[in-house]
Image (cartoon, rainbow, N blue to C red; front, side, top):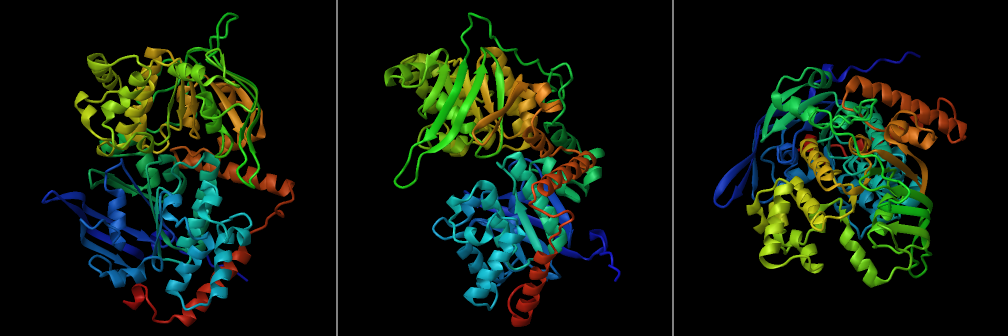
Amino acid sequence: MTTQTPPSAAAKAPILEVRDLGVEFFVEDEWFPAAVDVSYEVRSGEVLAIVGESGSGKTQSSMSLIGLLPPNGRATGSAKLAGRELIGLKHAQLSKVRGNDVSVIFQEPMTALNPVYTVGFQIMETIRVHFDVGPKAARERAVELLTLVDLPNPVASLDKYPHQLSGGQRQRAMIAQALACSPKLLIADEPTTALDVTVQAEILKLMRDLRTRIDSGIILITHDMGVVADLADRVLVMKNGRVVESGPVEEIFNRPQHPYTRQLLDAVPHLGAATPGGAAVGTSGTSATPRRAPDLTKDAVPALEARDLVLEYPSRGRVPAFRAIDGVDLTIGRGEVVGLVGESGSGKTTVGRAAVGLLPVADGSLKVNGLELKGVDPKALRAARQDVSIVFQDPGSSLNPRLPIGESIGEPLRLHKVASGAQLSTKVEELLDQVHLPRAMRNRYPHELSGGQRQRVGIARALALSPKLLIADEPTSALDVSVQARVLDLFQELQREYGFACLFISHDLAVVEILSSRIAVMHKGRLVEVGPRDQILRAPQQDYTRRLLAAVPVPDPAEQRIRREARDKLLEEELVAAGVRAPGADRSGVQRTEDAFAAETNTRNIGRGGVDGL
């Protein structure tokens, strides 16, 4: 029996045709454009990546296709799905389209999934809304979908609530829900933001597999150019609501025509961009100042020193105590930047929280600027916090929404009685100058600032007391590439000026490479490898570190293809060696259940809903 080769995506008729799409919002008696004259096509089995900075209009233009704009928004122009117009449809008509013909994978599954319903209930609800099936058939279909997205133990996961799943598992559950009705078009809005590199690699592999398995068109909205290089067939670059360039992914990466596209690509940190001599290549393309070597002379007091450190989360009710960190040894010298990397749940943030006294030391020793934190007196801890600060991952939630940013920045100075009155006001203005924010912004509230501006405020507040040790917990993970580049340049500038030591916690190894002199790798609460940056990145000693590096997407389609194939081969060999998978095993059984369900629901639902039933 011969197998017919399916036609390429380029040879197929477009599943979605967008022409002169416009999106506007009515604010203060005036219409403001968010997207202007956007035109593109998407074919079955094709991935179109829409990229650009925050506020470029990429998300709003995509959400307008299925009527998910806020009440003060409107869409104009044309968007035809399988020949039927979407713009201007009424709510009842759009309800048949959403989930059935067009599905969305949202950026943050924890907020998109309903916390009071189980994952299984939410998937089954989607199925039963669009298909005439009973509870038993819907549950069987839900299990098939969770199997399709490789969720561990899908039968048990069906009855779990979103908070009982990890970030990667929640993202898989949301993808399963999006695929419940085998949609013609899938909109993936930042599907890998804030996921660690290994989970991100798994989600990208899943989406590549699904693209061929379900033959749907995919619109990928992202600011991560490594993800674009890994997954996209074509790229649409947007700036200020307009399309400035579009074309095949290889052409956009290798021969960009528009200055903005070149600027966007130049801002992307590239793993391996550091010179062999140890000077990191800065985000602006110039050679950055080499990271300061650790000051570990006999008489020097390290900024942070952990010995056999054990950290536990206390028991609650019937839930026993959880040991998050077990036997960690780590030293950070004066003025040294150490990168702490690892998967979600490895214990990175727990170490950072303990260093600022937010988590007690269960066993071992943890010294910060010479002060032992195990059993420390609260009064001594309060005094010690003047020399250690933290920059949180999400500045939006860490800043008080009721306080102007000037008060948030000055709060540490006021609480520690370092400055008050006119002196405090002057210091706040100096800190705003140092993070390159206008002094007039001191009277604005956090919601009036962009993500990059809020992160600068978080850095200014952390530096208010001139700390000797700074804990930076994923400070750039949710920022687009150009804003991230500016924040990283600012961080390097301030580190050189203040000379503070830093524990830089991140899942982005390209960022860690730019900033760190040494890298520590964590896995399941233990340090598996610590060493100089170049040694960790170029000659890792542990298998886990090698897997972590192999999972990092790079902004180069050809190089990423080679890395992806090497990683897939490595993982396949490990699974075969562990006896988890037989050599050459495929997922044809899952595909057969997918096909069987599609045939069954098509038979039961001829003429029901969807674009074809409008």
